[in-house]
Image (cartoon, rainbow, N blue to C red; front, side):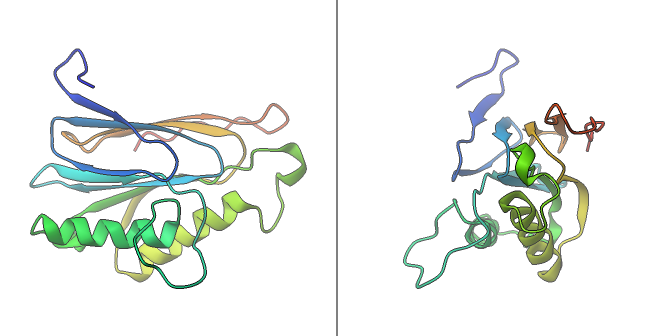
Length: 169
């Protein structure tokens, strides 16, 4: 869908990922899910994913964007396809919120596990994470402008949780 300012706009559903150029803006809505953005500042190309679970067990036939570990592998494949080194991208990560009052603060909520997987895996692979807004409760609206590398995050915590200031990354 084309936006009024001429940018191509993409809305990611859970399990989707997208790699685009400087004329692309990507949006999503996160709860316990996590998105990471990857931006190449020199080429102004980038990617964003929206994963729902940290990983799956068993043999992987095709990469599935619903799983964080596979979304990271997808990014590596796309970076190679575009002739770039994954380490040249700036990484930002968002989401992993607890969505129900009864799990806020729980040690092993799905949101926390999603955020931990993303942070740990990306850092273990040598990526420098330049911005993050993960954990807490509630949902986040994310907008990634590939032309500038800017990511906007509007965080709406659960009513019983203390409001947090949204990160501008």
